[in-house]
Every structure is written in structure tokens, then in C-alpha cells.
Length: 277
Image (cartoon, helix red, strand yellow):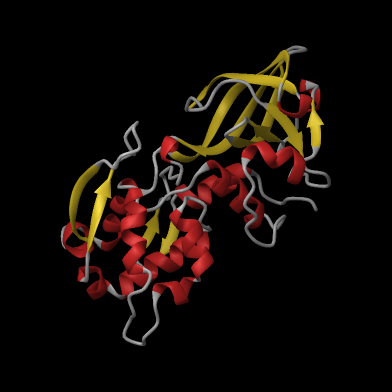
């Protein structure tokens, strides 16, 4: 637990503006991806990794060996590390001949009944790399939900990026007050950058506090990965509701914001001891 020399918006920029640096140029990780089918599922990613992770390059090394099995598992469910994505993409670029070995399914969000929404089927090289530049092909694969990051993945990998965590720890949002950020913030005047905004099924970070509007409202920036992928929502109005939420914490809600935060509703705010900017 220590001082952070980065704010969450800097990690958003690292991921998306201009993006992660591959041998073909920057690729923006501008996609939300979550294994949970209620949050869209990961059908495109599953169709890619189930075979491609085991195919060997000219030296007999598989992608699974090159990147690491756990890193692939995390990328598959939307919690992959930025460095792992770069390794995966550079492996693909170096071994494009392997992309013709099998077919993948290009899938949209899972349907409400949980079924797959298959939009196209084909070999990766033919679908992407034969039609456009390598950089554009990888970007299109991000758009087509082969790669992305969910809310838990974003927060956890920010904590790794800033040096607070030494590795990935899988914690569901509702467990954050018990395992990650245990200090409840119930006074809006006490909200600070790097505080955790915790819903029952979502987690985000306070990026900056601009001003105290009154006893119940403040203007903040927040960062998260939700619909649209990793993002910074600026000039959001944080408002105390007066109700009680998770672990008895004071409930807050949000209004406005640019772009508008995809997740609204009520949440509580928590702080990680000894973690500050």
C-alpha cells in the first residue's frame, strides 16, 4: 500500500489513446468484454482461444506457453493485462500463417436467453488480415469482441499498472469492501481521487474531484470499463442520497457526465488504506 503516481485516466489513455503498442502500431482496447452472459458474454474470444492458444509456431512454442496459461484465461474472460494483450497480438502478427489453421465465430453480445449471436464464421486471416492493414485488422478484432476488458479487469489492472498490486487478484465488486478497499466514505466532502465506487455488480474509480457544489453534491471525473470499454467520464455530478447500501455504507448516485456513464443507480464509496495520489 503506497502512493500512486498515476491517476486512472492515465491508464485509460494507455489502453485507448493512442492504444497499446504492437509491432504493427497502436491498437485501442476500446471494448467491453465480460464472460458473464448477462453482460454480453465472450463468445468471439472463446472461439479464438480454444484452438489458437495451443497452435505451435515454427519453434514449437504455443501462444499458451508464450503468454502464460493464466494470462490467456484472464484475457478470455475480460480481465487480461495490457502487457498480455500486446504479447498475444505480436504473436499473431509474427505467425499470420497460423491464422489460417481453423475457423472462428464472430459474435455479438449474447442474446437475452443466453444463446450465441453468430454474425460471421471464417478463418481469421481471410476475415481480417487479408482485407486490411495488420493494425486495422487487430482493431477490427477488438471491435468484434475478441478482445476487451470488464469493470473488474480494468480496476485490477490499474492497480497493477500503478504498482499497488503485484499480480491479478480476482475479486467480485460486492467483495471489494471486505478485500480491497475497507474504509467506507460516507461524507461527500471526504471523497478523493482513487476512491472506489462500488455497486453490487460493478466497480469504478474516482479519478478527480473538481469542486464541492453543496453538502450533498460534488463534481468529479470517474474511470471504468463498461459499455464502450475503458473510459473516463468527466464532470459527473456525484450526489449523496441519504440511503444505506452495501455493508451499511452511505449510498451515492451520479448525474450527467461526458460521455455519460453507462452504469447509474446507487453505490457506496470505499478507500484502500494507504493508497493515495
